[in-house]
Length: 180
Image (cartoon, rainbow, N blue to C red; front, side, top):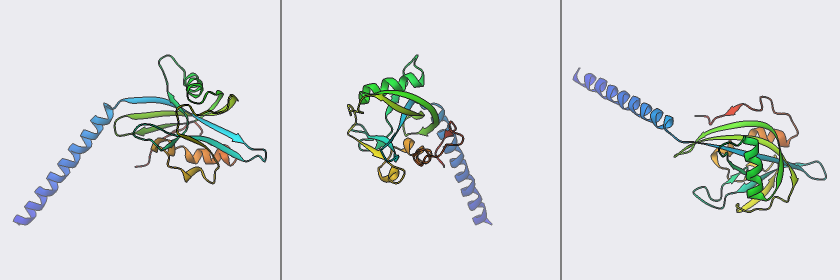
């Protein structure tokens, strides 16, 4: 009888600690800073009609060496589309036209929450010159997952694969969250 009471007490304490931890995590997430960014999904075709997406490799910071879709922060007073045009001009010395929004990625990094709006884009002028990134690649549907993506960017790969295969995305602007 005494052992059963000890087990009940142990289980009660464990449940209480788990509940406390869950509340702590919820409070932490509510107070986490949100960073609003945009990403350019630049699809190109070769002379045979094969489609490629332009990706860049970070050359700085904690995520150095990881791959991402180019873009950056939305500044106060900017529309997401204006921010994307500015960021690509600053990062790649290229003028783009912004197309349809294909998704908004919501992702919790350890120190901030990222909200990333992803748009299809076309190059209007310029040569996608690397001014901030370490490397760049044109990736096909077959080798899209051959590089190490930033966690948030990884969430859009299924949709990009569909675009590279020449198919239409259903529910294009739907928010994407990591599966837990």
